[in-house]
Amino acid sequence: MKFTEEHEWLRVEDGDVVVVGITEHAAEQLGDVVFVELPEVGTTVTKDEEVVVIESVKAASDILAPIDGEVVEVNEALVDEPGKVNDDPEGESWFFKVKVEDLSVMDDYMDEAAYKAFIG
Amino acid sequence: MRDARCAPRTLTEAGRTGPGAPHGGYMAETDGTDRKDDLEQYAVREDVCACGVAHGPGEHHHHHPAAAEDDGGPLRTPLYDLHVELGAKMVEFAGYEMPVSYPLGVMKEHQHTRAKAGLFDVSHMGQVVLRSRRADAAQALERLVPVDVAGLAENRQRYGFFTNNAGGIEDDLMIANRGDHLFLVVNAACKEADVARLRAGLEPDVVVKSLDSRALLALQGAAAEDVLAGLNVAVREMRFMDVATLELAGAECWVSRSGYTGEDGFEISVPEAAAETLARALLAHPDVEAIGLGARDSLRLEAGLCLYGHDIDSESSPVEAGLTWAIQKVRRPGGARAGGYPGADHIAWQMAEGVAWKRVGLRPEGRAPMREGVEIFAQATGGDPVGRVTSGGFGPTVGAPVAMGYVSAASAAPGTVLYGEVRGKRLPVAVAALPFVPAGFKR
Image 1 (tube, each protein chain N blue to C red):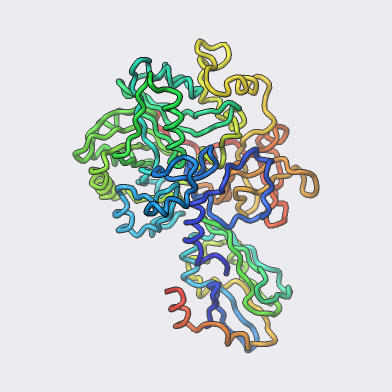
Image 2: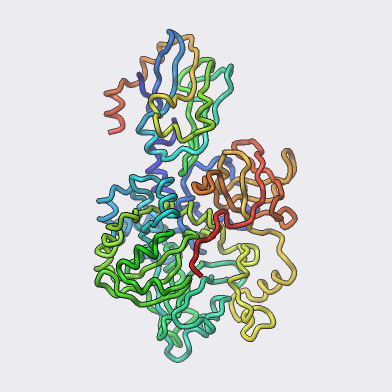
């Protein structure tokens, strides 16, 4: 698992598919999530593009695409039950999966120890 | 993701600067962004005063709030150490370091308050005593508020607001008749301006004293009476908007049966030295949780109660805001003490002729919250805005997004379907009767 400075986690699955979610730390800081808007499957995304809208009781935030690729699956369960994001942010409550051409960008992201140091 | 880690910082900034200026006539400004990333909604009944600048009480009026930091930073209430001990997230709000939430979280804090009882520290709010000297304080205060103060019975309280010459609202407040004096509670961000207004308008006929050595706690929720009765059984005799002087946990407290959550409950003015003892005594009850400003905001929103600086301000009138119920008959045209307050002619004219814009409840039909600043349209495409959201978010008791805002009179009937523009998309929103959650007051 890799981590971004935007508090996303990325996990490679099936060779060229990257699963994206938000970290426990992010979920805790956000507070209770009440709304999630996901991209459509088939959308091509580029790094740093806003792909998900997430709203908590406190505020609206975006999730940025951490990598270039095509959205191949989204976690529809979060739309019906946004509170799941708080229950299991680093497991069941992933947001979307992106099929990527070039996985090398993963090397730019932090490992768990580096992320823990980053959030202090 | 963007903003998650920044949330506390964003909160701090929102608390310090607020929106920067009153929202003005709701159509007057176009919010360039259609997403509210900041957390203005954490403001609780107060945010900016009529001067347009959120400022702490330690500063002069019209001082920029940043100056507070030069003077040693934000103020703390007598319960600051207790908040920290309880694990609160602290934010700067109206010049004070205040708890925005505790480890329970906004959603559960909100639900706990309605189901059982929540304890709020509202010590940042202003407490003011008015005493008659050459003139009767109640009659004198009627020069500044369109409220029947002279007719307010002893040991009773009522809601009111200061108006300006244009009929706008300078602040909203509670007025209690405590026998030989009036006791006012005003919004934190406005308290200096309010005291200045009272001094200018009432002295030397009336003695105006701003109290800075009393804390203010609110105990709200269905179990509030049972909890407080454990400290003094006399609270059971109080009805909604009664006030009394009662001993609680060894201290002489000024208690009112009121609050700002839509629930039954009490507001308790307590000498600051006794505040922590009282708060701990209340928190010791298994039904009581400490509740932060975040839940206070969602509770008052569901209750349809206005947040000063957002839902009402110096450019919105009581008639537009739907607050004419707070102007008693005796102060309306034809009444024995009609008018005589700032903007009375304008407000009387609006009561007779109607207004172009009205504050309404708004229920987004989808799941997306519509927050402050969202523009409202009559059609799904095209046309000019017919309104704007002034407070909005998720209503934990309603289980769906709720909002309030101003819309044109033609669009203000409950049930009217309008469209709020969120992130560039027009989403259906229905005009709804307020409150969203029925009040639990003990009348």
